[in-house]
Amino acid sequence: GDEVELQVKKDKTFLVKLVSVQNVQDDGTRIVTFQLNGELWKVPVTDHSAVESTGAGREKAGSKDGAVGTPMPGVIVAVKVKAGDKVKEGESVATLSAMKMETNIPATKSGVVSRVVVNVGDNVEGDDLLIEIE
Image (cartoon, rainbow, N blue to C red; front, top):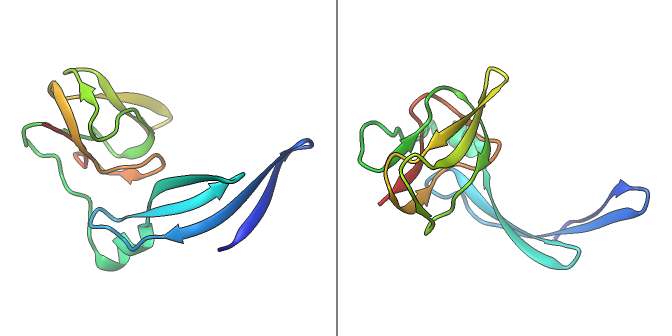
């Protein structure tokens, strides 16, 4: 794979090597695998071109039990949970930046996170599904 050296400070350099990029999943993400200074990392990345070319939009939260949706359009700046995490109703599970303000998005019920469908940096619309809780 491609390899690049990133110098972030005069005495701090990172060696990044691309290992693999998976096919687009149903939620519009790809798993990108790379090495950072020899350590293997797997990161979900939203492929906006794939979502746009298929015309697929994000799933809506609606009034589904356990669905956590966005209160307004914005950009996801933090995802605080992952699948399998236990959460309590009202606990912050994500942070949305909209109109130069950050908003914590709370869990809609207590339970276990079954699915996280967004990543940091994703643009979202009002009522887009972020997380499902069982």
